[in-house]
Image (cartoon, rainbow, N blue to C red; front, side):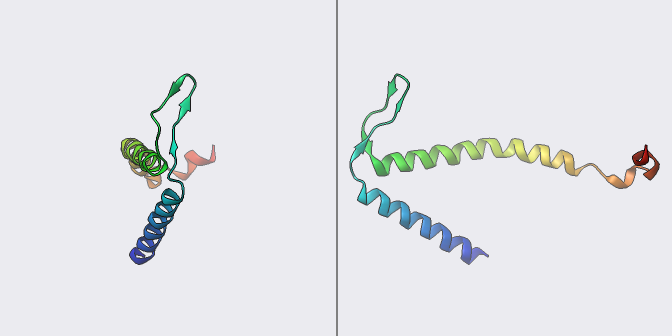
Length: 85
């Protein structure tokens, strides 16, 4: 399993590197009235992935907290008569 994940990660990094090298032109992001400084496509790609990883790292503990509270529910504590009503 670890080998497969390592291969997929390596393939993704290789694809990102090829995409960055082939598109070396400077790009800028425009959002409503705000426009970023023109940066090479590879830098924008790395910045977008970094922001995504950071947001997932922030939001993941909240998701784990709700999953663990649901896991604490033990269905054996309920009588079958309560479920038949």
